[in-house]
Structure formats: structure tokens, C-alpha cells
Image (tube, rainbow, N blue to C red; front, side):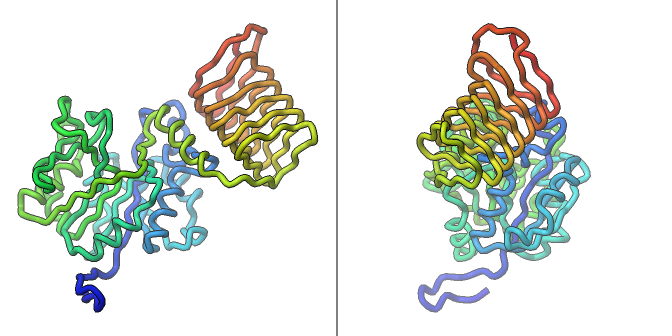
Length: 368
């Protein structure tokens, strides 16, 4: 610990990051039957990667990633972390027994360092640099990020009085506040003692809200920070699509593929390396993945087409299509849909209608 010569503020040394990439993703099934929910892409980039990039942008390069059943897939996607400018250690969690259990699982790796815990399926548009710097300076035992939400019963909820946290409740049926815990927490090693002194909840998990409440009750300094920027927990289809819209809306147009003369591009469009567009119209913001083919088709706003996809004779908008899927000869518009990897969607007979889909990997659908 040292003093900041310019301000007199306390500066705490090393801060690590613990990113959670376990869990079963039950709200995104069938997609998550065959893939980690943290690897579902937003604007053709896995959600998990946004979290890693946010942590590195905040100056943290020592990262532990908690993994579960999908650990091998996560390890293969992330590698050793060098592509992000970080060093990554993978820490298997024996079972999905709660966020606080994940912290205990990483105790040996975390040691006596202060750390950021970042849920790997969360997106914070403005990053976490401000919060990490604040935590390094204030010397608090914990700091929690909060955001006002329309459905607080879906989250851990904080109650504040005079700017201080008085109570935390996990997914209360009747919330007394609209302040939800954002999926980013900052802790000192004092959290370990708190976790060891809480029981498992009714759902069989060690709840991080219970651990933070224990810290508060023990007189620890736990500070709230209410964020005003955009934040999204991408645990549901509608949240995933909204996150895709938000990220696509920040696109810088770039054409690294092949665009024929009879193609109409409108707005912000990205065509990644090897992507091919023929006899089609693409209205941005939209992204066409590496090696994808879009032919005799319409791609509407807020659509992500993954690498190696083929979209021919179809209309798709406000949707996410994962890599190597085929949408061919579909009448009507595919809208507000999440289509898994290597799916095949074709019409068996011609009758126009709109379709709303969430398909798992390797699905084969015939639409009438």
C-alpha cells in the first residue's frame, strides 16, 4: 500500500480478476445444451471476450477463469490469454454451487490479492476501468456495482439508506428496491471469511449476496456504486438480442470480403474476411462473418451472421445466426431469433409467414 503523492489518496497494489464462465445457462437452452453460454457471440464475438477485454482495459492482466462442464470449450476459445494481452489461469469448479462457492474455489489462486469478480455473461458498455481505479484508491473491503432495472425480482437487490447499503436480497419475490447487483464485484480477501460463515441457500448454493451481507453485518466497508451506462445480463433470448443491437450500433463500417455490384449496402455494415455478398440487400447495423455467403437475400438491421453461414433466398433481421448455419429458401421474415451452429432452416412449402426461432446447434427445421 502506498500514498498518492498528488492527492494523498491511498493506492492499493495488485488487483486480479476472477471471471466466471461456469454455470449451465438453462435460460438459453437448447443453445447451451451443446455450448457454453459465455461463448455465444454478440456481433460475432463471444460474450466472454468482452469481459476479458474490459478487465484488461482496466489494467488487470492476471486473470483466473472459473469453468464448469464446458471447461474444455472455454479453454480452447480463450487460450493462454496472450491474444488479449493477459495471462489466464483456468480454475475448474466441481459443481455449479453458487458465485460465492466459485470465489472459494479460486482462493488459492487469489491469495491475499484484492480482486474483481466479473460474471462472464454480462456486458457493461462503458467498461470497468473507473470502478477498478476507484477501488484501488478507496481501500474498501468491497464495492458492488448497482443498476436500476425494471424487473429487480430477477436479480440480487440492494437496499440503500443515506447512500449506504443496509440489506441485500437474492431474487426477492417482492423487491423493496429497483437496484440490481450488476455482475461485477470488487473484493478484498476479507470476503473469504464471510463466505465460510454463511450457509447454503434454499437452492443449494453459496450466494454472493449472503456473503456481502455477512460482511456488512460484521462492519466491513462495503461501498455501492450506481452505474448510469448501459449494462446487460445476457441470460435470456431477449437480453441477448438487445445486447447484439447495442453492440452492432457501435460498428465502424468495414468491407474485408467480396461485395458484388448488384449488392445494396445501407448504414453501418461489416463484411469480415472472405465474406461474399451477391444479389442482396444489407441494411445496417449488421455484420457478415468470415467466409459467409449471402445471396439473393435481405439482411435487416441488428443482425449478426456468423462465420461460414449461407443465407440464400431468405430475409433475416434483428437476429443472431451462429457459424456454419444455412438458411435457404425461407418465405417470410426470420425475426428476433437466435439460431445455433450448423443449423439448416428451409421451407418445405411456400406460404409466407414470420418466424421467431431459438434453435440449438445442428438443428434441422422445415418451415411451411
